[in-house]
Image 1 (cartoon, rainbow, N blue to C red):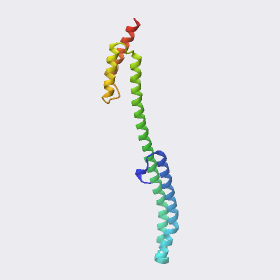
Image 2 (image 1 turned 30 degrees about the vertical axis):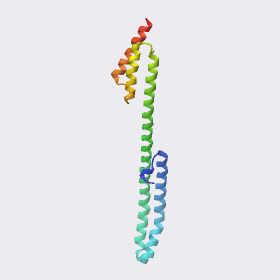
Image 3 (image 1 turned 90 degrees about the horizontal axis):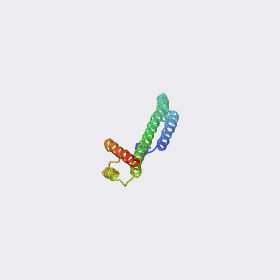
Image 4 (image 1 turned 135 degrees about the vertical axis):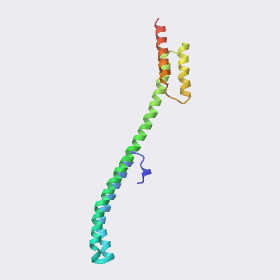
Length: 153
């Protein structure tokens, strides 16, 4: 697998399993293949060289597979975290929009003060900002409290 291929946690784990399998299989294959090719190329004199290459390959190919597997796992975790953060960000925005809409309905739209407060919220939403600034939010809450007090009296 290439780095670009890992787009989810599952793909990262699958890629990691492939790297581990390839590392161990390649290392085990080289234990036999390297001495054999050395013997075929140079005879008995090159056999120790081929055995050393095979043993080193048997050691380092699985280590390389493990390191690549860890890298793939981390790319998968990263992809999952990025996707999760993006989804959470969208949910927060939707919740804040629904909270704004429910706050408008709870305040009672018959009084002019609440209509002004909802106009501020709509203007803020239309400008692309989904959150109210803290001062606007506090002012809106004060207006709602005043309206409730006036209705109670």
